[in-house]
Image 1 (cartoon, protein in one colour):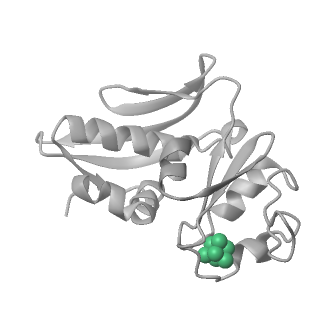
Image 2 (image 1 turned 180 degrees about the vertical axis):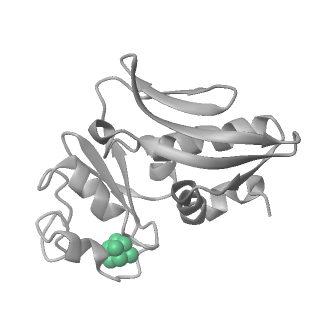
Length: 172
Ligand code: SF4
């Protein structure tokens, strides 16, 4: 979700230098993965309870990815946005012309796409590149009236995490 969508959905924003953290107390089930991940960043006994800069942006993003309810979300701040291009058989992420990762797919009889691989280069980890490629590809599938079968474990996990937003394109 974009920052505006998160705010519209009632999330509260905690700004950091390289990452903004968003929290919805309505979705939080107090499982505590965030606190276990880092008490420096997520401390319910402190105000504000989230300090987005208390760890590196990558580490904060990694911890937020363990939140099972999506009560915590993040938006990474980038100097130049990551660009996603959809080619005939792959989705490519680039920044300043440099390739950051790719996701490959096959078109099955013009009925559905099969995502068979998602790879992000080490230097680009923590920028949410994989997530962005899946997001862009879901949009692409929607526009082309196609379904998606996410065979690659990363894409499959993204579909599970975003079940509500991606259910309409999931091939069953
Ligand atoms: S990990 Fe998510 S659901 Fe669990 S306590 Fe933290 S914010 Fe709430």
